[in-house]
Length: 140
Image 1 (cartoon, rainbow, N blue to C red):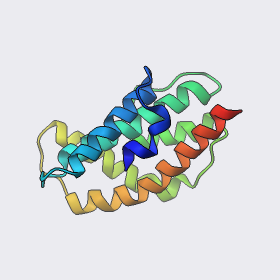
Image 2: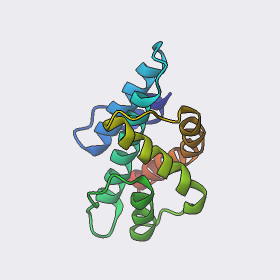
Image 3: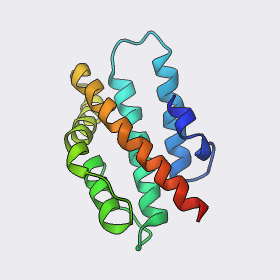
Image 4: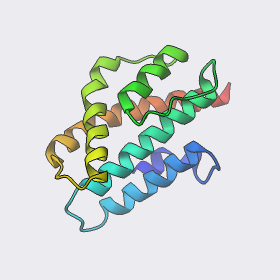
């Protein structure tokens, strides 16, 4: 599903190519019998981070992105520095939960998988907007 959403970016040698690689990893995880959501969370956060950073690098007036891993901060910068518009408040908590889950994965803490899954459902709406906007920007 995620690999298909990002198929326009398949195997590109850039941040968005890395986003596609993480999307492919998520799809593999979803077809496995792994019950722990931590690997999914790590790859989902990385996919989102690479996509946001790619969009900041290629669409912002400065052509750069911050070194933060916080998805909500990256979204705020994207809104501030490009013509991308969305209700950042709608996605703020979901992006924060995903960021925290990925941090907890790195340190082997137990994750709230149900809370994470709810956040992913909401973040998927934003993902659709970002991919659509990024594709439109590429065509002009």
